[in-house]
Image 1 (tube, rainbow, N blue to C red):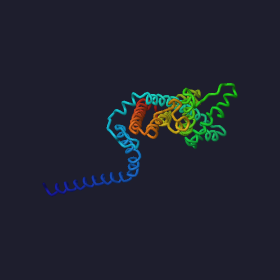
Image 2: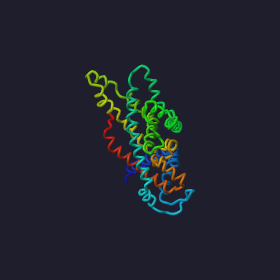
Image 3: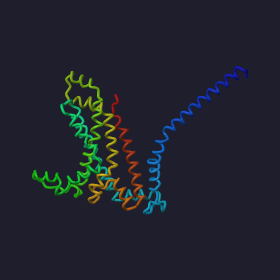
Image 4: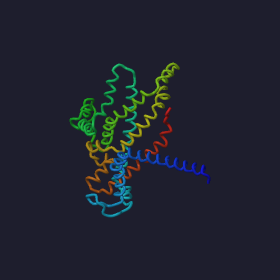
Length: 311
């Protein structure tokens, strides 16, 4: 090898080593910036998730310590348990009751609040006011409203000549009553997100439609909904996840009753873990709920995102 070729080879090796060194430094720098987030996710997300999966494979004592490895027996027991299957049914019904109605109501309110009317800011504040209340405070308000003797709802029914309803005491109405309260609690968040999406739609589209003499309903169907579809898709996805994770209002209003008619999966997990001290069963239910939510989200992204227009 000549002196010239040897020099070129040395320069190439130095250049390559410098590039690799820069890549390593950039990677280490990126990891350094991400390390606080990675640490928090590890402590509060990844470790609890792995620990829950681990405990779901064991029988445990009242302190949550593992006693005996049972494999998938906790899961097979749950899938044949009438109580757990009833929890699954209650959860699905709760999702069906709350998500479509809640999203539709928020969309209607957002369309009304997006109109250029005098004093509309006051109504925007009213429609979004439920965001400023905690689940506990909202649940207490609804608990008094549903009271069979002094509740304002039954007083109104009596005033118009209808029979009073034991909303939270009757298995046939308890889940519907909790669903109505949940829709009211969650509408504020969905309303604000959808209103923001509506205000980002190009106004020139509506001006062109008005010039063409297109009806308001046609504009809603062909302009508003397609242009709002990314925001609507986000709201629907979040609403599904929140509905599956509902706990606070169930605990305050009904505690899973009457006759387990409102015993959704999350509340069933709570009862098994902190009342019955059956950590293995509670962990197995949490794993089933986790993978069910992943499956639902995957299906929604797989088929629902096809309807989303990003342009």
